[in-house]
Image (cartoon, rainbow, N blue to C red; front, side, top):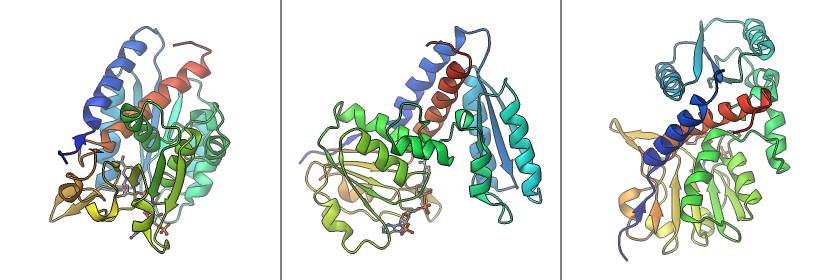
Length: 284
Ligand code: NDP
């Protein structure tokens, strides 16, 4: 079989961001995103600065609220309440993980669902499960759906296996696939025979954080593979799929880096723009 085609997430994300910038340029008022970061985790700081840069390039306003590691839950919740009440702020994200003394569930519960552009709060998770058009879908799964639709404009009837069941990737992704009429299996660390599941699938999405776990022997000929994992081996980035091993068996595969990662930021901006339109009763 010939080599798998690359699904270029970097290119797709750039196209989305350019289109977004053109839309935003038409409005006098600009969408505004607030990013809350508690603590000094270096990787989180880099992620948030990248989000800010991307938002500004698209013509949005974006402020990072950088709080000390020692910030109390009450202080964090009062910042969220302030941003909830500020009509100029259309979207809000809280960088995870939070310092250990703060309850993530409690914090996410306080973000106004209409401003929850990460789609992590329980209201949006529930709306997504109910296949409601009101749901704000989590950015990474939404980006994955965009990439999949570039391969399969109609996903109806496809068999998809999602490896991983986290609240931010695996579960919302399973809902989106189901809402697109896929037959979905979610596997996790307690699944008895993952390979038996993945070998039957038209689409395999790996989101487990296990470097190069998915091998050619795990997939069927011509499968479409999406790699969400971000891992490092000897300092070098790699995904959850063994790219070199699967590339002669899969039909399409996303690279790491340059696959799902760039789509996450693009979808976060899209969610913010859509929240801005809704909150201001504007049409695209
Ligand atoms: P979590 O650690 O929250 O969840 C990992 C999931 O994978 C869990 O459900 C876990 O199962 C499952 N899992 C772990 N080991 C195995 C195994 N050996 N076999 C099968 N399942 C396993 O991770 P996230 O969902 O937050 O992230 C997953 C990966 O995606 C990470 O590498 C992360 O860095 C990356 N990521 C990338 C993003 C991007 O933009 N590209 C965005 C978000 C995450 P169990 O529930 O049983 O413990």
